[in-house]
Length: 196
Image 1 (cartoon, helix red, strand yellow):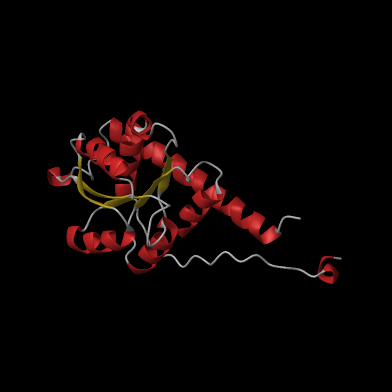
Image 2 (cartoon, helix red, strand yellow; image 1 turned 180 degrees about the horizontal axis):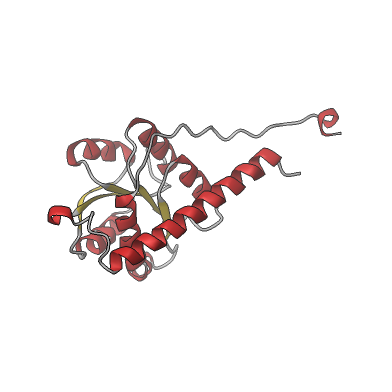
């Protein structure tokens, strides 16, 4: 039996995801046509911090980001603890964040980040797929969007998603992120009498 409150939360999260996706698609289209000038105000580049435990992914993401004229990768952190210090010193506009990392997973870091220093976050992971519970949780915690990366042949897969990644970084840079107080995931348990 599916918990109704959990089903309702998933529905709400899915609706918010679809709203964000539509907004991001509109933002990307407006940016491509030159209507969005706020990002390039005073020729300012979007500062991106990449947080991923894989050295290969950090390298590929840096290359993808630095190829764009309107953004730059200001740093790459192998875990959230290093990222915390880099955020303080580099003050990035957007973070890209993996889910599975040593010392602290990406969702725990995202929850703490949004509570203490809200900023636009793009989830980039093999675990963030459309319809995934982890994706819903990341969006619920305050992530702006997600990119699902392939599990096999990661470098080539990332190159195929380069346009998607950079468009979503541009859109994330425009997002207004607020402090979140997402409720912890709790499953209610019912006795047989309560169900009947």
